[in-house]
Length: 135
Image 1 (spheres, rainbow, N blue to C red):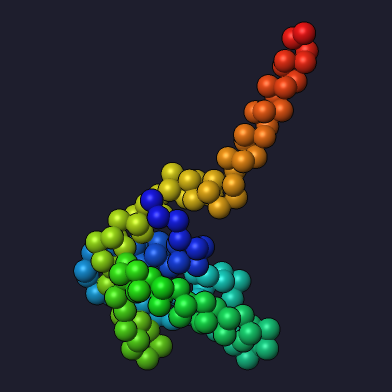
Image 2: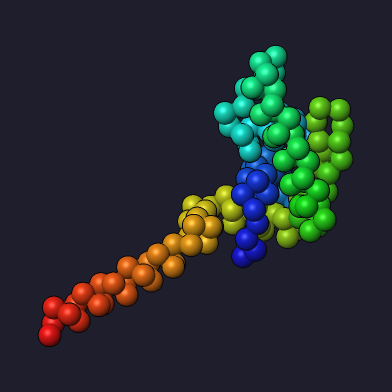
């Protein structure tokens, strides 16, 4: 499984859930994409300077993630006003399916937070403790 950055994973999961099959085209609102990356962003009240900054940051992150996903040939998209028209390639569909499952999220979490290094250190420590108390 390919490990993508968090923003790309979240968007690919959203595309998989909204589109549902490869090569099918679907419109998705830009605000939905921003809320996927920044759930705390209230896009209805952009008048607040703090919300507007978060919204602009989210818009930039969405544009970057979509560009990278498109370059990797996971999605095809084009802008249509405040919406985007998306379609998933077969590879993007498979990866989105994996990221939307609980086991896929667990392995992503393990990889992202380097749980294996921590787990290895704990096992080494426990082995050392057992060996010391055994003698």
